[in-house]
Image (cartoon, rainbow, N blue to C red; front, side, top):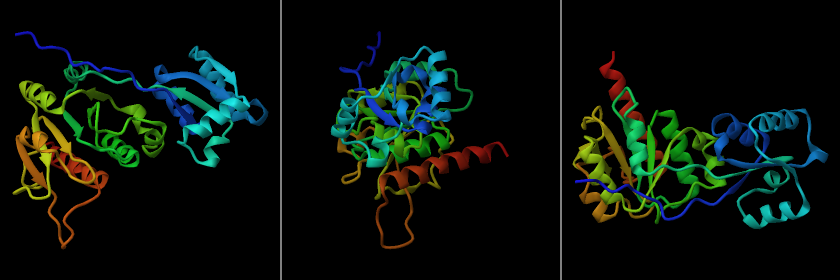
Length: 265
């Protein structure tokens, strides 16, 4: 039976990203995401001019900032006063993959894949922090549901310290159906819950793995939890029964790294 391709119903909106570091990181690692560079030439120095030269070599449009553009950025509501008055900005739209495209890319991975799926992570600061940890841990891709999820906005890119440029983001309509496809490809689904019987230190995370992190308030949704092959938990050493989603994700991802590194020693 031929499997249907996963599709998105809409494309992500373009976002303003301000500051030399953010723009330069995007130019170096994901230039295809940059729609245009916006510059305030009255306040541009040598470093800004170097960034503009890179943009021109990559055939990315450059235009001078106007008061209207600054007003649009302020109305956007994503930036601090300091960021709004940076001398350079980029209008970007980060590319996303379908599930089929992500699976095709995993065929070229030499090690067993490690994927992160986020269920109802709606705080952009949490999403940005998770992306930063995921890149540091060598995660091969992040799956986000089209609904009930924060979008990869300029805030997310900023909080991720540019890590969002370095990882594949897959947007899907239905997480449950996506897990079924991942299982067909030999990937184990590990759901993280506070009441799981097995800890992250007891589970074998050296297999092809998809870690599922639940939302900030209610954790994994019931239907998502039912599709997980195994539930795992972080053992607590006090009466505290939960952690911030980004902190929990970081701990679990690096437990995967620890276990896999142990196999090679």
